[in-house]
Image 1 (cartoon, helix red, strand yellow):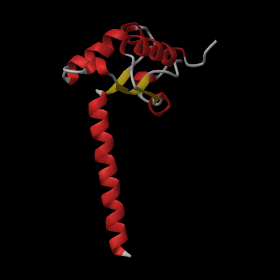
Image 2 (image 1 turned 180 degrees about the horizontal axis):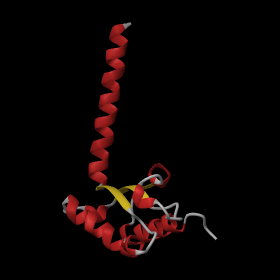
Image 3 (image 1 turned 90 degrees about the vertical axis):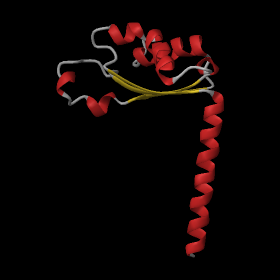
Image 4 (image 1 turned 120 degrees about the vertical axis):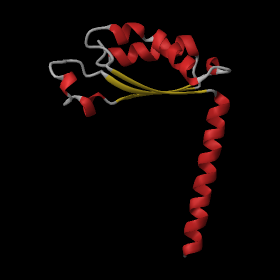
Length: 118
């Protein structure tokens, strides 16, 4: 029996429906276990951050992308003791490529600035 059934279910459903090139699932539940709303909850899987890169998001705005994911995870969101909070970062492969290129350029600039200080 899995110790992360909610995460396992999310991974299965998202992979099957969206065929993501990137799927990161971060369980942040431990950071929120002290919140009043979580008192009495026995679940260790209530707060998640997801990063999903999929071609299925092409030509869709963020709200539509998020609705797609919410629809996939409806059971996990509606279940008592299920997902209480879900943070989504959804992007297309092209958006991910641009983000990676931006991050590389920023890092190169930081290195250049540091080298000038020496």
